[in-house]
Length: 163
Image (cartoon, rainbow, N blue to C red; front, side, top):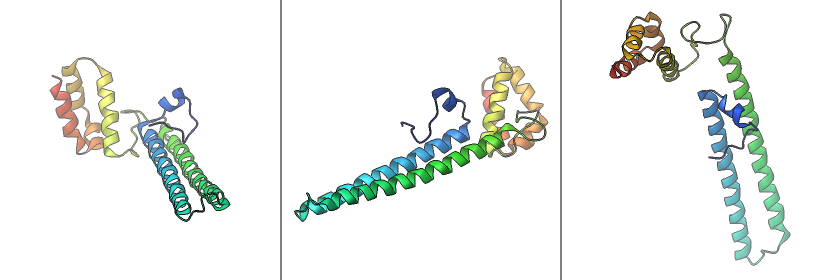
């Protein structure tokens, strides 16, 4: 999928977190649907004019301009909403009064459970290359039980599979 809803360079795009990337992809899909719907609407008007033997009428040019303007207005609203969401998410991902979000020093409780799972998994996968030590450290982590909830057992089983 080509992402052209936002003006980001490759390094800026790669700096987005998973939630922000999902927001960008969703907005891009909305934009693509709006453009496809506008093209379909223009084809319908043209086929009606051709069927009525009025294809050279200036009505099609005016209708085409109106459809394009409506589509651009919808896309502008989607882009504005995306910009707001990205800015809001960036504020929330920076941290809180205790400093930047980092597991286990300052975990982010605003994340959904699946995102928490990924954060904790990445933390333990980077912690050490020794699977036994990784599993022992995870088993001793009392914060992980409450932070992950139902995903604790899943992560434990995944880390145990490496042993």
